[in-house]
Length: 320
Picture 1: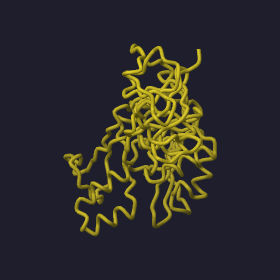
Picture 2 (picture 1 turned 90 degrees about the vertical axis):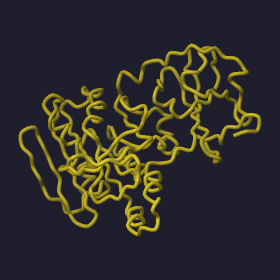
Picture 3 (picture 1 turned 60 degrees about the horizontal axis):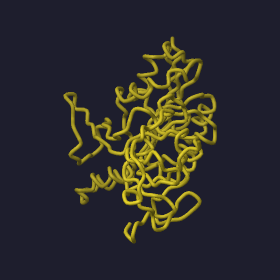
Picture 4 (picture 1 turned 30 degrees about the horizontal axis):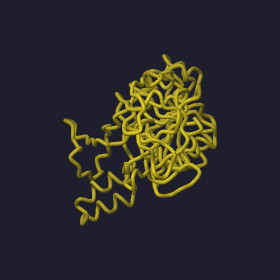
């Protein structure tokens, strides 16, 4: 039996960067806020609890491997904390973490399970720098929270150097042509632990955040909740091969066809009909439960643009 065919349908989900800046610009006259947008405030520190919940699904991927956290200040990163605490349990060979500074040369941290080495870099620790690319070549697995504004470029580099990875990004990245093509070809998929997508990150003290989701803890550290968060990976785990349990039966009234594409509309993943074998348009949240053995992704309907992956916004009876 062939896998059912799926078209991913997306509502307009704002990227993390745009949403963050729109919150900040509620006080748009403040020059510091405009500077923050221009400077791309991309330092979001992932909480250790979120890292632990996800990494527990991949423990068999790390034995004798070099892990590279190439977007992580060693003094701030909970990824570094996690791998140091679990170094022997995971059977790691080495951990490398690089610090970034936009204005000056920085350093890297290396840990072999016995000794920490803090070594200077000639460049500023940008993941695109020659030094960091050489470290990337040495690494087996890359685990980090990359800059949200550079997500496309970051993933492209990982693919270019054929690296295994587990990274945090925005759900909206699924609709990027480059990312979607890799998802369609089963080269990238979503991680296991985040389905609601609303996660809290610590941000640097100098960030100016005007949002109801901001909080400051008892130590004066500030946090902000960000929507649309997902893990992106090419490390396999058993849960992604579990079938979605389906029970609804197809009928043309509940599942009308699109005017502009030969597929039926399914509003919720749980409503996918068990007895329909043709193309189906599903919400982007379907990706949280996608099993490549049960379904085949054939395209997307997310923008007015039409290309080899995108078929335009879906319409039913003339309505978008």
